[in-house]
Figure (tube, rainbow, N blue to C red):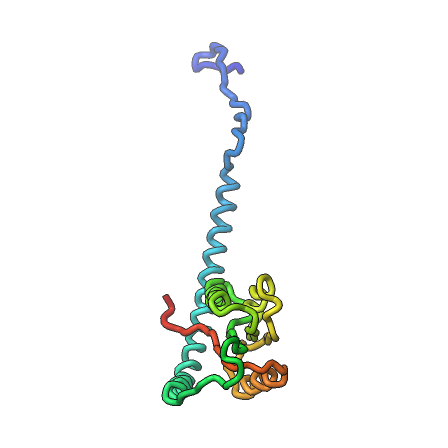
Length: 197
């Protein structure tokens, strides 16, 4: 490039024009970084709204659970005071029925897997020959189908979406009675709420 000096003399000046910089492999551009930041902020907003929704659901479930605990404590006190003995059938190998109260879905896998582990430990201890399992909830049913499908007597789904009703409990009990499986001992496995943590 040629530039004219102040007193009319022409000078030859070199002008630096940078060529496009060679791109470095796996190097994020400014646009990539800004897109990533925007997506992280959007994910944070979604997570915050999900936390708010789950807190509202938890509060509603806790309010519904509080009055029902009295009935559960009364039923357990009744079973502690009354001595229930197994029937005089074959004492060496009594038929056992295990009812597992799980849910149909949920992101907390420990809830379902701990129930199934407890039942599997019982089956390993007592033997799985004369034991039948009734699963209330799809998650437990799926886990039992993998290893103990022959012990699964029946399963129920769509339970626990709404507050529990007595008619649902009587329906499950009547289905167990109508199944034709004569059991000497029945056990129920369920989760007990302690704290949010």
